[in-house]
Length: 291
Image 1 (cartoon, rainbow, N blue to C red):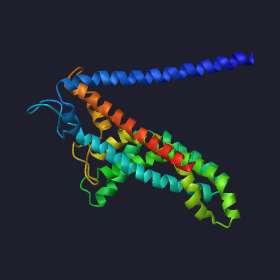
Image 2 (cartoon, one colour):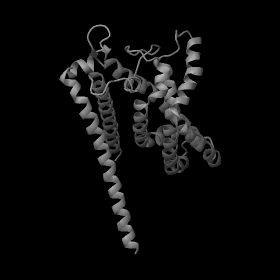
Image 3 (tube, rainbow, N blue to C red):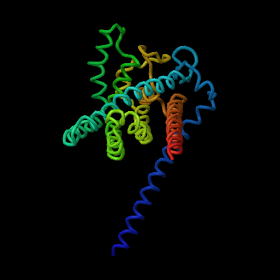
Image 4 (cartoon, rainbow, N blue to C red):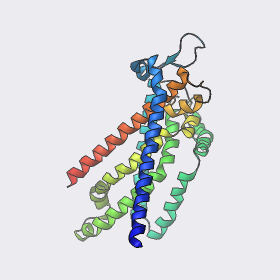
């Protein structure tokens, strides 16, 4: 009986795995299928490197250039990742080295709750708090890339703090007793031994965070200003996800505008794939060096 249950469970897991792969393949196929008709009218070079986005011919010819959107997506995601990794790793170190297990068990679930807050709430807080702070600091409208990056960094913290805390705690339990037995201070061991040993697993957390950062729509759209401009730290810009969310509802089905939005989504998907593969290659190289 137990053997039959094990076989049934194994079969169910394989079936669900195959279903997940098929769903992913279907999504990729559908996006590519809807994107390819655009390139019968617009060259790939013009689409990727053009800076003029005019999907409807209000004045003159249509133009489909998403270079500014690509750079804005990468720029805001990179800044958000730098902020969130610095704060997330620092918070994880504090929770592991400066608090008791009881205090940590109270703080970590509270931090995890941040992941359940809808992104529109983060966007609303960004408009009412962060944007106003930038206006007081002298930024004309307050809506800018840096403001969006700060809001996005806060949204990424739950993923990074939870995973980093777990990883650093395991490394602490493994290495700290031996380090202290040799007379090494706690913080010196954390900086030179525990944190470097944890970095390989922290990279995995960054993969999840990068996917969330580049795909985030609502909060970034509400705070960033949504202007087709090359991104500057204190200037407005617009991400790929934002332009898709803003314009997909008004795009006529099978029009060049419609296919251009799907093509932009395909570019975002390729960017995520390249970044994830790059991080995994870096992690694999670190693992080889650590052997």
